[in-house]
Length: 125
Image (cartoon, rainbow, N blue to C red):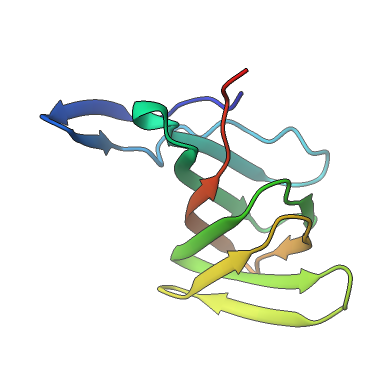
């Protein structure tokens, strides 16, 4: 299970998380300065999870998706390499990305990147 970050409040059925990008837990990948945390996971029993991913200039992060995910680049930029095809794309602020389940991606940044993600994954037993 991932760590929840931010402060949750509710207004009726509306869930709101403030500061969901602050204090993201380190991904503990040697040589890589990457952090990730869920702002929400499985609210109201859904299979949706959402949060923030942060990468600072360091060694690349290689990640294989075990679920479908979309990501919005909030700040900075990412250089993404599809490890199966070798194809590269450069994602800048406000770009939206889709990573299908099973995709292995190499994440890099020239300086800094912050992304907001929404994934189709559950923490239910």
